[in-house]
Length: 134
Image (cartoon, rainbow, N blue to C red; front, side):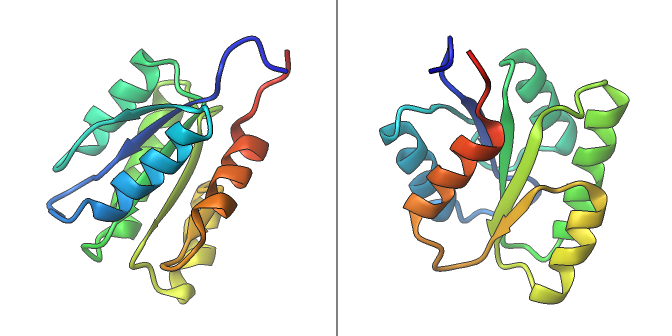
């Protein structure tokens, strides 16, 4: 058992204004005992990275429906590295073409969840990927 709960920042980067999926994932994580910080809509990559560092997050989950996923994830990964916070696990979901998933993984994104993924699967993955030893 870990000394402290897993802490995840859930964010909506960019101009995308639809956050239902992000809220569903945030609620599922919270219901599973994971601490969640939801940043709200229209966050810049810098704001997301700042929040993740300030909140001592174990992971950042991004919801992207705007089509700007390659640019947004790349900037977040760059900023995490620049701020020496590459140990924060980054995952995401939304409308992301299957062909782009390997590109995101090459950037260092740990996991992409496609539409229809059961929340229990997301929770289990977050526990496994972002969990920390006691």
